Length: 159
Image (cartoon, rainbow, N blue to C red; front, side, top):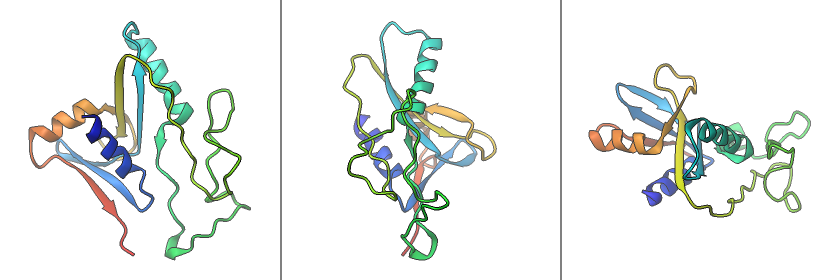
């Protein structure tokens, strides 16, 4: 299952595509992924707080889309194409700032390994099209294994 999550995450981070989840009688985009390690003794409230902290710190957010018509230039004047400045809750930037240019995608660094249960979730919508539900990867996987028509599809732009 870890390999499946890694494959999903790798597909999600592709710059030229998006993920479309066909879940029960509904198609919805996958807007974000997040994962963290939950300590064995944590209760549900503490786990949810840690999940929100993990999202704020460095959830696997979609990389910025390239400019239309193959224009790869960025425009620092209006902020488009610049690296995201979300950072850790203390205001520290995410990734290494010493060797990046203004248009580079963020370099996310993996946190040190921890013991406990790995929690993996994807942000999608169960109804409508707004990002509204964090779905456990285990639940999404069970849905997809339950019927061959339920899938996560990679939609990419042709050159």
